[in-house]
Length: 178
Image (cartoon, rainbow, N blue to C red; front, side, top):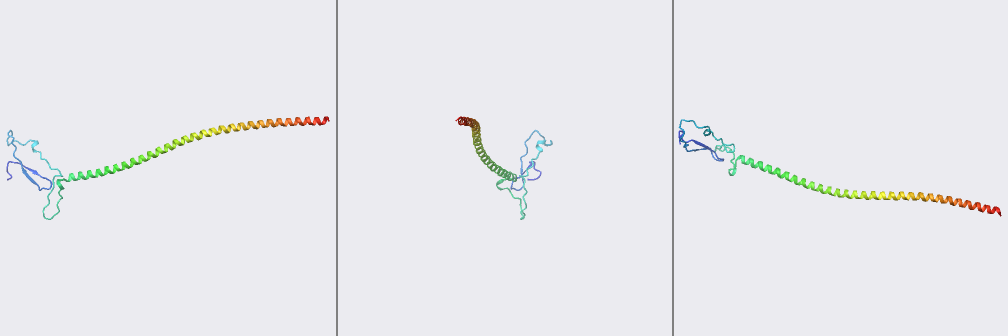
């Protein structure tokens, strides 16, 4: 095919293949004359993406750029590697979350035990306060009764002394009369 053929050529580049051109059939637009310039939409050329363009190195034993395996592009490999890193990060975060949840559950159990002990302690404290109040009331009553007993003893002892004195005086008077 010569350079002056009327059919335009299109660049075809697939990963792992050498650069080559394909011939496209001539457009069959009958409304335009050959002298009219092509419209803007027809003049746009699609540029191949970086992932699709690869340079084939000469075959003189020089190192070549590695062709993607199984039709994978460099972008796909980069995306897969990034996805694997993201998955590893998510897995690490998930394991940390599980550990944190287990720690939180252990803390909740410990808190429940402490609350139960606290409730028991509150009951015990209330019981002890009631016991102390009861014992205080008993002691106050005992002190009151002791004071009353001492007062009565003193009173009886005074009466006994008076009786003893009166008997002595009567005896002395009887002895004096004889």
